[in-house]
Image (cartoon, rainbow, N blue to C red; front, top):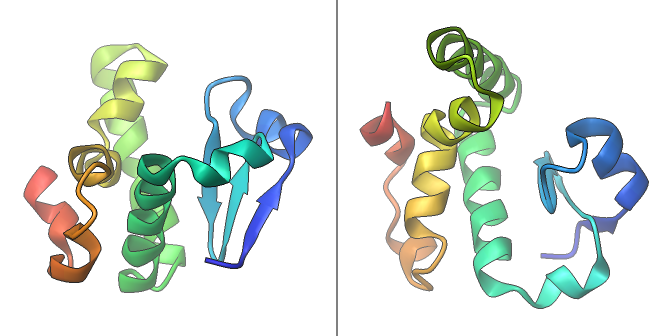
Length: 113
């Protein structure tokens, strides 16, 4: 993965202090360069790149915001709403599996909706 940017400022601007990384097609933005060595985190972000490609990027973001909004309205908790998003559920469920991206089926996040 060669489209990695390191910007604590940009990440804080987008997520506050919540995230260590964010994927904005085609880039992965990290808070610190040392995070490049975190295999689970990088795999998590690669899963998001696959999801974004499957939904032609714009539909990923629309779905992501919609799903977050629904969960936030229901739960009234930003962090809980984030962890309920199907894209995040898939990425967290498989970030520790080095073989997942090779075996992943298209639209696998639908299993977590």
